[in-house]
Amino acid sequence: MGVCVFFIVMALTAGEQAFLEKLQASPTKDIFEQVDPASPEGIALVKQLVAMDPDIPGGLLGYLDRAKKLLEDSANSVNPFEGCKVEVPQGVKVAGPDDVLETEALGLPELSKCAFCLVAGGLGERLGYPGIKIGIAADLASDRVFLQMYCDAILALQARAQAAAGIAEVVLPLAIMTSGDTHAQTEELLAANDNFGMAPGQITLMKQAKVPALMDSKPTIALNGDKTVATKPHGHGDVHSLLYQTGIAKKWVQEGRQWLLFFQDTNPLVFRVFPSVLGVSVKNDFAMNSLTVPRVPKEALGSIACLRSPESAITINVEYNIIDSLLKETPAGGDTADESGLSPFPGNINILLLKLPSLVAALDRTEGVMPEFVNPKYTDATKTTFKSATRLECMMQDVPRLLGPQDKVGFSRYDRQSCFTCVKNCLADAQAKFVGGQPPESMFTCEADIYADNARLLKEAVTAAGFTSTGLEPNPKATTFLGISQNLAPFVVLYPSFAPSFTDLKDRIKGDFKIAPGSVLIVEGDVTFEGGLELDGALVVKMKPGQKCVMKGTKVKTAGWKLVEASGDDLPDHLKIRGYAMEKGLAKIVSSSTNDLVGDDSLKGGAVVEGEITIE
Image 1: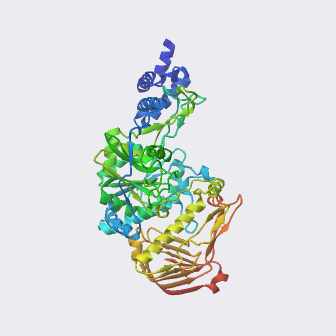
Image 2 (image 1 turned 180 degrees about the vertical axis):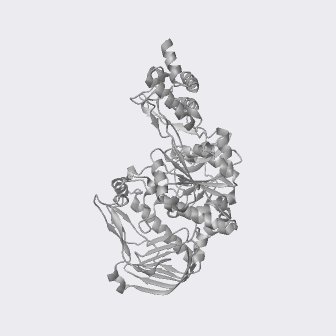
Image 3 (image 1 turned 135 degrees about the vertical axis):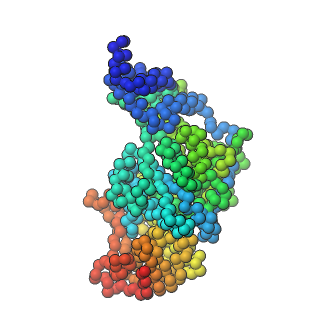
């Protein structure tokens, strides 16, 4: 025994030895029945646990204590919503352009006080893509990857905030939560593209760690075959813990920032409504504002609901498989529609806008620990051991459970087409969902959503500016690739630098727009259309910062661009997950370096370009 103790003392530091003693008195003490702490394996295990400790919210011992309580509740079938009455929460339905303009008027002055956080811990394996999801080309017309779209949007909002505030310099920071799977590739993507135009230090990467897996309800930490700790993801709620652990959120508050937007890795549409969502928060003094969409009853989409108990009330996301049972005892009799034909409880898409001071105060109270849950699969009725190792999990949308009674929580509801798209499924799974009447959530549907949203915004801006438009609606004739059909709108790409808000877009339009089906319109930078636009083909206008372009009475007719089927092992990865490519024919290009037709020379004879183009 003396030799063993001597071996431990020699191999472990004093701090590690003290940590071992705490472990031996903790709920996971039975781990040392699997491995002798005096053995080389045991010493390596203790060192691994010590190294993990600072990365686990609340530390390893706090994690085990919380796990013991949650597993006891699970074994006893404790219902956290027991006795709660379900009510429709406070929120705002933003119904159309007039509502958007009204809310943007309140949100745009607040832009200089904003920060952004991207949750990007996922790979594209499920899509059949070998890299990170934020590195996938989001649309083939502009060839921008998702992360570039987000950086473009933030930089455009930053430029607008700086111009409006008359401040010498406004910097809107971006934090990105990565994982062990995505961290290095995210660093490489940013380095290869010079941070997509963002300044040094403007982007902060926060790497999410995994937590120990648990093998029983004691709980005992699960080990791999080599006697190392088995780990599992802790959930996207870690984004809040990381903001606390790194001190970033507190630093932002000290800099005077008031608002923090959390957004997801393959949903670029959110930035189109962000100034409006910000205005809703300002008007209603929301400490937390969930961006939501209309929801069909029993749809597999979480709901924002107010849960009222005799002691308190909380507005929070309730998963779709729970909301129906909670509503069984109400007059509605379950998850049913109201007079609108929709659920009165809006659908959660995990886009959150929080007041930074409220979030920081809440995280300070819990030392960065988020509310957690556990979902073990038991081997038998004793509910003591598991079929496979489990772990505690946390969700980013559970922040209301940390906020104080003074912090108002609500929602903003927008039409789904204006704020929500995503990429989740490989082609085979997407096709099966499409055939089954479910959203395919594929690259094709996401790209189609991007074009449709830009075209819709342009159509609404033309109308709001007092003019008329034709051809900006989705084509009634569907386009199909590999069994997935979409009614494609014209390929409209409006860079945020052209119009970071709907208010700005309306001001860019000074005439009627007539767009032929299948046309391509890409606009970047300070561009104004005077006398409208008539387009049948492809027009690309790209201005650098400091340049200004006025398009007067523009008429363009070219052969244009089109989507074509694509297959084969030699395809780039971003095309393999699509099943199609974009064939780029003749286009009118207006930029600092060219003002000419670009494409197949044999087609120039069939092109028509009219109007005056002025570049300053």
